[in-house]
Length: 202
Image (tube, rainbow, N blue to C red):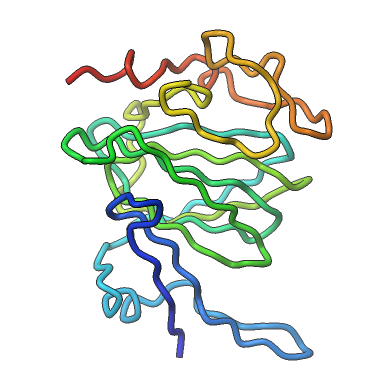
């Protein structure tokens, strides 16, 4: 009954997919299957998930851009409350789109899901007052395996919606706000990441 539609290779980046579940609604509310292995396999997506995660963040929080060093994870992400701008950056060294990014707004209303395969950096910016974010992973969390890239690296040049401020050579959030004046909020770790060119040399 689930039935999904899958847009593959979004943004011209191989492997990135936007998945839209079928929503059955009436005056009482709605029902949808958020994951159905049979439907995914019929769409050519045969990944196996081993862990589910959920987080809550407030407006202006930016998490990322994160990747795993030795144990890369594919992620199927969605928002169950609020709105975020979700971003993936291709870090596959042999990819024709290495260093290219793609972003999509995920909301509780549009119910879109974004699949990001192994070999990408990932991050999101919270656009609503609060947002609850869920994602399935193809590998377990391994302490100490996390890497990251500067969210504002001019080489990648992610167009974060509504973000005002100018790049000062670091990933610091100082001086950055949303259009309504909400300060951008990043963890101390995320403000210390370097850019693509400094982090990878091939």
